[in-house]
Image (cartoon, rainbow, N blue to C red; front, side):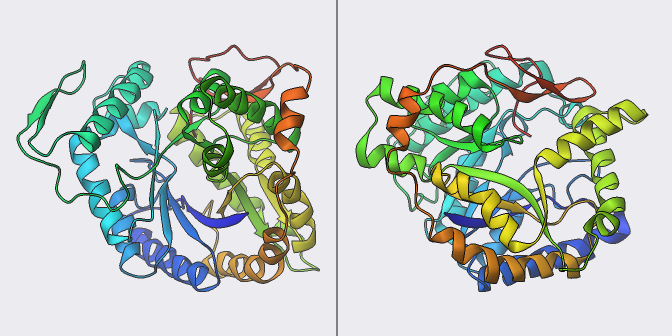
Length: 386
């Protein structure tokens, strides 16, 4: 198991943006110096839910500071032009020495889609078309190519410059919580960025679908292991001092995060108590606070399932820099060494194939927050990458 820093810090306002950006880059430097293998960037706009907004620009800055793997988790395809995005990714792949993973998703924020003049209900169709054109651009002849779709059309008279280091292109990963999409990712041999909040038993149900897709496509052996080993799971983490009441320390910051999440992802400005409590419950499903030894035991089952990387979301809800840095230091010294020694269950694939069918159960997006759904349909309109 490997470990990455997941960057999605909220900002109180314009006067704090510069300070937060400097703190984030300092946290990246610290994590890289202490052995974190990767940095993962996401994309959010307009509401203060994310301080940097432009993952491509921040990733370029990071390449000039530390040699780490870089990934988008995720870039929102409908907000980009596929040809320009491929060009930017190629440049990042060069600057990072071939260490980029291109995580893509459809997005979901009504506020953000309104800002970009895009229809949120068309986001899945836009994502599919975006990936098709991007892969065409990455594999096209040097003489050029034409591309045509509902959302983007054009002609490239020449080649995309620069070329990427990784050929034919940096690996593409998808962020999703949708059962049918997870199985499709397996069939297509794509990397799964595990969005949402999953305990090991529920994740096992979805890994069963992921494996079934691979089996149907004949993906096995070293290729299957390589894809499986690049899966990534995000978890909010706070490592408390032994005598600290972390609930007292974090209470105000968690409340800030929940409110900003509702505003950014659901366009909910007037938040009632039911919405707040429901979404606070969702926060705690994807959150750990406590001592390092307890975190090792929490993450051990994920390592045994073969999750390749844990993306650690340490900076949330205006948490002070010194508390974020303290968790980075303690995680690197007291958690990471123990988990790096844990190996995937050698009989995992046989166990997944022989497991009995179970009703799928996940948290799904509603129009005013998250809700628990015991048996979601194969595709839910408001389900998607977070």
